[in-house]
Length: 53
Image (cartoon, rainbow, N blue to C red):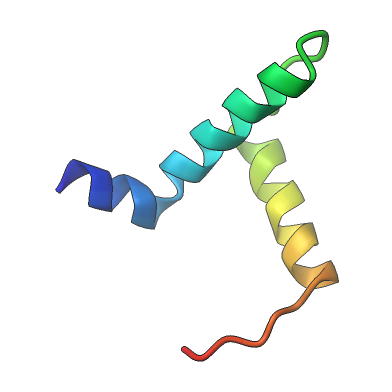
């Protein structure tokens, strides 16, 4: 149940992003949750995808 809620809320996405960021850019600090959400929103607007639902 906990896993499901974390996937729906986006907490798991943010943590995966931070781990990848720290692995690929160890010299730069991980983005804050607000910075990550802002980046994610911009990316969605720049690259719209058609969805079935």
